[in-house]
Length: 155
Image (cartoon, rainbow, N blue to C red; front, side, top):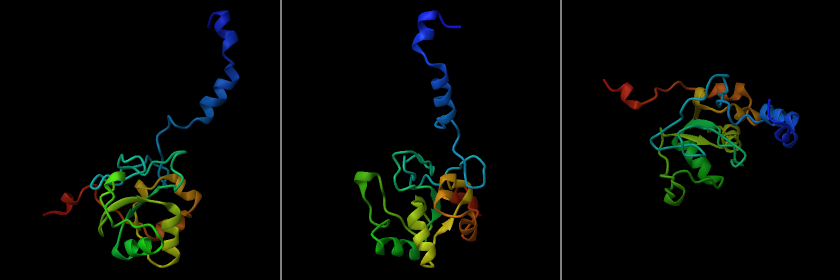
């Protein structure tokens, strides 16, 4: 128990509410309910450039879907004003090529889906917040299992 002067300073019920509502300390979850796995480190992806499709209040675009991009998807994104192919070093963005894994915005991925050019999705690396925009069944239609590194595929 805290000394009386400290008890008067702290409103314990308010602190308990904050602790229960603040999920920043919890591990990020994927759309399958498991722990969020890395999406890609070459190039380094993620809103926070940590390799994961983690999200937070700063991520207004919801960069939550781990996509394996195709040329059709990249062209579609360029046409809707989201050029993912051109390098932009000022944003630590190398420009993407087909086969790259990248955390894309849920809304733009969904546009591509409706237009028939959705990129493949790595479900274990797609943040659960993507489900606020895209139904799980739609993500599952485009799901792929990919190894953590292309070196696994070398013989």
